[in-house]
Image 1 (cartoon, rainbow, N blue to C red):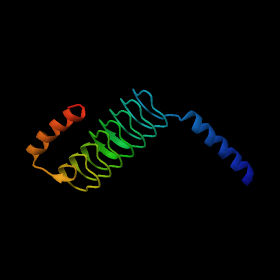
Image 2: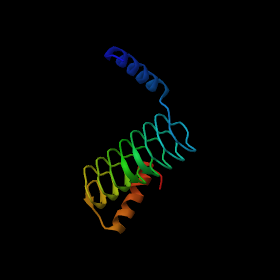
Image 3: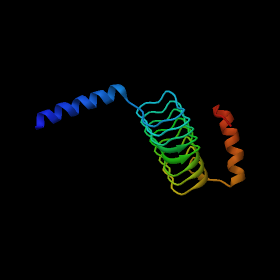
Image 4: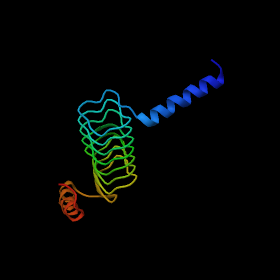
Length: 139
């Protein structure tokens, strides 16, 4: 095989993959593309090992997340992007190892924050209950 043959075959395989966008090992999932080992999910694209998720793109190892982009090793995220090793975030961007944050950007190892400000646990839940209602988000 020479360089030209290799390039031609590689280009053919690349075109096939872009057109087909196959899934590998996904179980009980619908409307997914180019995803691997995802379960009980809907509307995933280019995801790996996501379970009980919907409408996520370029994510891995998520559980119970909705409308996330490029998040990894997280659970219970809503409408978040570029977050890692976090849980219970809503509308957060680039947060790492955070829990219970709402509308936060760029935080690391923080809990109970809204718009990057710290609140007590009790204050946090009271404020986000009002915010979710005001923004039309699920409880």
